[in-house]
Length: 224
Image 1 (cartoon, one colour):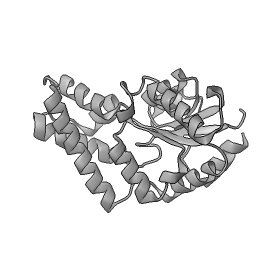
Image 2 (cartoon, rainbow, N blue to C red):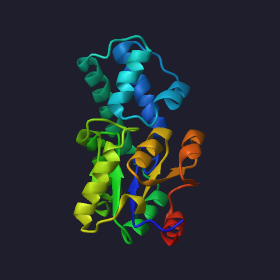
Image 3 (cartoon, rainbow, N blue to C red):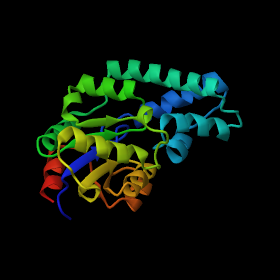
């Protein structure tokens, strides 16, 4: 397989090692705001990989509660506030993933396509000192539909090309994901997609899998 000419990363669970935290925060918010008990298994099997608004909406419907805009907003605000507090105390991007970003950004255009809110993604990137390494950061605030819809990847690809001044074709862009919904979104946008090992469903539909984000993996991917 040829080396990618650009890379677009998913954020939660891929660049940021935070899926267990997200599951806990959503479970807590749903319990407090809607009286819904969600197990960790429920979160990972049914909701991980969806955008934050879609997780709140789907979890409420699954629990038999009307997902009114006001209730969804309270759940999301609780989750975001808890997330910002938790990552401020313990930044979630591992050192190895930081090295991956540095190696890739030195060689090819790099972007993020995330289903999380911008205030969370930007906060974590600033904590890690990585914000200026990305040509584009697309979040759920920027699109009308989350993954598996390809809109986020299409927009990230467009903005990355504009910011970098390099017109990279979709087929030459590698997306890296940790969920089946994310892989589907990237592939529908015409990108190749690698899955980070962990979710078997993502690995089954991705073009290939990688063990983790680190400098060695970055070098191997960029060599083709």
